[in-house]
Image (cartoon, rainbow, N blue to C red; front, side, top):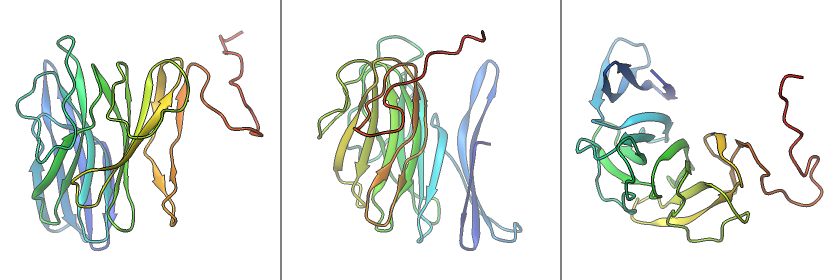
Length: 220
C-alpha cells in the first residue's frame, strides 16, 4: 500500500503490489471511520496509484502511472492525449477522480512524450485539481511559458473542478534529471507550492538564500 487519507468519517487507502513476474492491478479502498465497514473497494486496472487527495464531499483524486500500451488503464473524458511511446517499458501518468461511492468520474493522461513519472496530487477548496509529474521527453500540453532554458521537464498542471479543461499548465526545465518531485500544496488564495530535487541547476528567483546548488558530495 502506498497512500492513506482521512475524510471526516471514513478512511481511504490506495496501493498496488509487484509480484514477479507480473504487476498486480492498483486498488483504492474506503473504510468507515471505525474500520468496521468496507464502503468501497475498486480495482484500477493497470493504473498504479502513487498519490491521493480527498475533498470535503468525499471525492477521491488519484495520480499514478500505467505501463506501455496497457488496455486496462482507466481513461474517461481525457483532456490530454496519451504520449507517443518510444519503446516497450515506457509509462504514462494519469490523473483520476472517483465519486464518494467509488464511481470513476474522470481519468486522463497528463500528456508528455516517452516515460512520464508521477509526482503528486492536491485539490483546492472549490475542487480544482493540481498534479505534478516529470517527463524525460517533455512535450506536455503547456499553456504558460516554462521556467528554465534546457533539459528535462517537471510539469505542474491545474485542472478545472468540472474536469473539462486545464486551467493552466506550466513547468520547469531543469538542465538535468529530476530525482524527486513531491505532491503540490495549495494555499487559501490559490497559490501553488511544489518541491523537487534535481541533479542540475534549478530556476531560482533573485535574493534567495542559495541561488545555485552546492557542489556534489561524492563521499570524500
